Image (cartoon, rainbow, N blue to C red):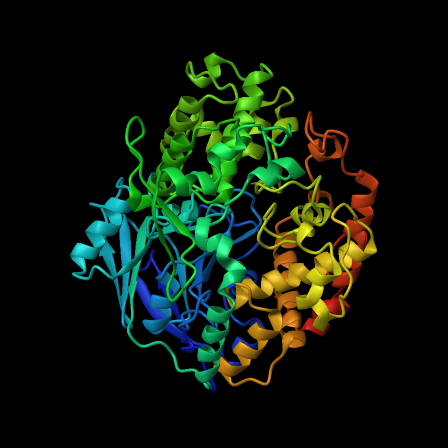
Amino acid sequence: METGKIPGGYNGKILRINLSMNNITTEEIDESFCRKYLGGAGFIAYYLLKELRAHVDPLGPENKLIFSTGPLTGIKASGFARHCIGAKSPLTNTIAKSEAGEFWGSELKAAGFDGVIIEGKAAKPVYISIIDGQVAIKDAAHLWGKTTKETQDTIRVELDDKRVRVGMIGAAGENMVRYACIMHGLYDAAGRGGLGAVMGSKNLKAIAVRGHKPPDMVRPEAVKELRDWLVANIAKVKLFQDFGSGGYMTPYEASGNLPVRNFRDGLFPTVAAIEGKTIKETIRIGMDGCFGCLVRCKKVVKTGDPYNVQPEYGGPEYETLAALGSNCGIDNLAAICKGNELCNAYSLDTISTGGSIAFAMECFEKGILTTKDTGGLDLRFGNTEAMLKLIEMIAKREGIGDLLAEGTAIAAEKIGKGAMEYAMHVKGLELALHEPRLKTGLGLGYMVDPIGADHCLNLHDTLFVMNGQMNDLHPLGLLEGVPADDIGPKKVVLFKAMHGLRMLGDCLPVCMILPFSYKQLADLTAAVTGWDTDIAEQIRNAETVLTMMRLFNIREGFGEADDKLPMRFFQPKTDGILSKTHLDYEKFEKAKRFYYALMGWNPETGIPLPEKIEELGIPQI
C-alpha cells in the first residue's frame, strides 16, 4: 500500500503477526486509505475481502483475526473507547464483526498502532504483548485452561503493570465453541459471531496492550467543546447512568418487545424481578465505565449464597438479562448474574448462549430432546439450575453442551425431528433480544444485516415514530416519523439510513448510547483528522463498507434466500399484547427487495450491481 500523509487521529500503522511463522511486521497506511475506509469495521471489511480466499475454514490457520481502531478511538471524551474485531465467522460462515469498549482500543492506539492482523496458528499456546510499539509473542502454556480473571491477573504480574489491558479468551474460546467471544477485561465482550473461537483456533490466549502516546489531533479544542456539551446534556443518558441497559424492562414486557421462552410467549409477570432498577436496589455495589467516559453504565454486582456472584465480572446488561432470564423463562436474578459471571469467565457470548439454551428448552418441552439426550437434565423452561449447568457444559463441550456449542442452526440440523422450527437465528446467528413483531424495521435488519440477527447495526423502530424523534436525521432529508409496525417504502428508507449510520458508528467507532448527533460526529471527525468532511461523505463510507461485506458473503455462497426471518415471527405470540400480531411474509419480501434496490444491488438476487461497485470505488478483488 502506498504511503503518504497521515491524518490526525491515526498512527498510520497496522501490525501484522503471523503465528505460524512467528513473524511480526508493521505496514503503513496512508491518508487516502484512511479516508475511504475510516477504521473499525471499514478496515476489517477491506482486509477480509481482499486477503481471504473463498471458503476457508473459519477455524483453520488461513482465517484472519483483525482488531481495528478508528479515527475517534481513544480521544478523551465519553463514548470513544471502542474498537472493532472481525474474522470469518465459525458460527455463520459469513463475515463477523463485533465491537467492544473498556480501555483496550485506546491503549492500542496509544501504543502506536491503528490495527492488528493475526494470521496462521501458533504451534503451542501463546499470548502477545504490545507495549509502546514493542511487540512480543510469549508462551501461554501456563494460561491455557484458566479463566479470564486468572489470565488477566497473571499477565499483569508477568508484565509488571497492573494497567495493562488484556483481550482474551477462556475455556469456550479454547474449546472453539462457535459463539465464544473475546473478553476485554472481565466484563466487556466483543460478543457476536464466534471471534473467541477463531482466537482459540490460533492457539492465541490473549493480547495485552499498553501505550502512552496517542496520535495528535488537528483541532483538539473541538474535543473539549464536545465534552462540555455532554456535561451540559448528561441528563439525556441519565437512565444509563442510573441503571445501565435494562433499567426498566417492565415496559418491554407490556409492549411485547421482551422475548419470553424462545420468542414464543408474551407474558412474563415477574419481569420486574430481573430489571436494572431491581439490581440497583438489591445486589448492585457500584458502576464502572470505559476509557474517558462520564456515563459509567456498567453494573457491578455481588451476591452471597447460593450463587456467590463476584463483583470482578461486573453485572448483566439488558441482552443478558433477557437471554438468560425471560427467554429461558427464568426470573431468579442472582442466578442470571451467576450465568453472566460464568459467560464472562469462560468467554461466551451471552446472547447466543441464552438463545441456544432456550432452543434446547423448547425442544425438550416438545419431546424432541429427552433426558437421555441431556444426560438427565430437566430442560424445561424456568429450570434455573439447568441453565447454569448448561453454560458450563457448553464452555467445556461436555455432554449435550458439545452439541449446543455448535449454535442453534447446526444443532437443529443435527437433531432433526423438526427442531429447526425452534432455532431462532438468521444466517446462523442467534437473534438479539428485541422483537420483530413490534419493530418491523428491526426485523428487516435481522434479515439483511451482513453478520446476521444483530440489534446494534439496526433500526429500533419505536425511537422514530414521532416527527420530533427525527431531528438527528434531518440532514438526510428524513423529517417524518414512521409507525413502528409499518414495513412500507418509508420504513425501508428509514432503515437504510439507520443501517448506514450504525455502520458509520462502527467504523469511527463510537458508543451508540451517547446522545451525539451524526452531524456532531462528522464535525468531530473533521476536527480530529483535518479533513473537510461531512455526514454525506461518511454515509457514503458506510455504504461502501456494507457493500463490501455483502460481497464477502456472496463469495461465501450466501444470497437472497438467506435473508429471512424464522417463521415463528409470521405467527403471533401465544399471549400478551402481540397475541394477535404477526409479520406479513409477502410484505417483508417486498421490503427486502426495495432495500436491495436502494443499495444499488440487484433487486431479485441482492448481488451488488457492477455499476454500484464501480461507483463506490470498491477494488476488484
